[in-house]
Structure formats: C-alpha cells, structure tokens
Image (cartoon, rainbow, N blue to C red; front, top):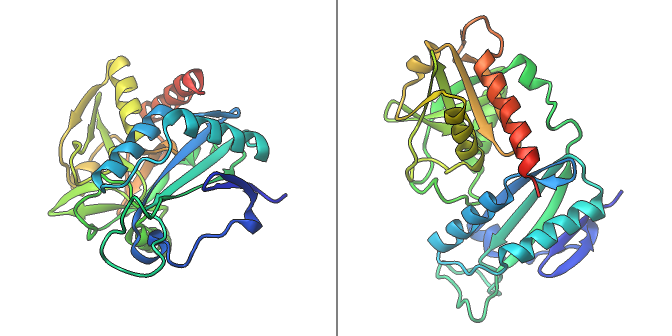
Length: 287
C-alpha cells in the first residue's frame, strides 16, 4: 500500500511528493520536527507536541504556518487515509526554498515554510517486547550544539550515537557532558533509587520531552519523589532501576549501563508501573 503524505497543503501518494533540492532543511538542517504517537487510532499528547513545535519555530524566528486546529485535522486525516491504528506521525517544518543556497535567512514574506507530514505504521507499539526485557545503554561524549531544547532536524550525531551503541552490542547511548548525563540519543534519561526518580533538569542542554513531562506528573501522583538534577553514569549504575522516555518508546526500562547490570538484570517494578500508568492515562486523554 502506498502511503498518503501531506506536503504544503496537499495530500499526495508518497511517490509523488517532492521537495526542492534548495530546501533549507536539506541544505542547512534549517527545520524542526515533532513525532506524535498513535494508539487505537488516536493521537497521544497532541497538545504538548504542538506547544513544543510552536516554541521551536519561535526560537528559530520561523513562521508558524499552521495552527493547532489545522494540524489536528491533518493528523487525523493522515491516520484515516493510511489506516493507522498504532504508529507514528512525523511532522517537519523547514524555512522553505529560497531558490538557491545562502547562509542568510530568506525573506519570510517571499519564502514560505515547507510543511511535511507522513505516517509510520507500528503494530504492537504499545506492547513492545523490549519493555519486558529492558534495554542496554552505553555512554558517549555529548558533542552536539548548545540549543538541544529546540527540536531541530540536526540529527547526525544522535544517529552516530545509535550506531555506536549498535556496534557495542547495546540498544542506545546516553550522552555525557562535563561528567554528567544529558540525555539519550532520542530520549530523556532517568534512574530510580529507592522511591526517588532522578533526571536532569530542564535547560538548553536537553530536549524538553513531552513524554517526560507527563511521566513525571504521573510519578508525583503515584507518591514517588522526583528530583531534577544532574547525575553521573556511576550514580545511574548504582541505582535500583533506570529508564528512558520518548514519544515512540513511552517508558522503556534500562537494565544495563556501560556493561554494569542494574538490579537483577530485568525491568524493575517502578519503571514497569510508570509505563503502565502512562499508557493508561494517555489512552484516556488521546484525541
């Protein structure tokens, strides 16, 4: 089946959707993106993703080409046209195509943003087998630019980090800067000691995860203590449990960090419970 995608106001077969070679996302990584999960045919944390999208665009002095109600219509239309029950919707907005390559931003009155959305079917997304056995992570240096809070399409180093992990026989990598963990390659990082969850505080150093915000709220409601601060790999290795969060993995237990096994080497009860709560509450609030 050929997917239907959205490109600049049109719904097209994926084979017919074309973007100029002069688009600034292609030439300069001058674009932002969001990924929204779909469960039971409905959108998870949609408002949160829209709010972060608007913030990313504003931080880069880019126009907001579509408002939330318009984006909701497009998201729902793509879900319907592609028959997505469980999966993801990828949204990308670039500064557009100025007709040639130039470091200087084009005039926004002349060059309109490029807007692309497409779906990815992921049957079994909520019942991911990895959540039952946990994942292994390694640590790598964090050499990204300083505005990681903006969700840009500059994903080369995270991709390299994923490959470093794969080549080391692990599932993902946690990035470390000045001795402290920032985040995973495409997720926020946490450890649990006793009844306390520790995760890095929000700043320009990490992405302000939409799933992160929801999980920390649910954790507090479940009477777990949350401490937002910098932490080291060694602290995480000495923890009872660890996990990551993202829009596509929800809450994913971590059972090994740089070759050190956490606990019994299996997902811990608190991480599993947080995953369960997140999925339950997110489904209730889905649109």
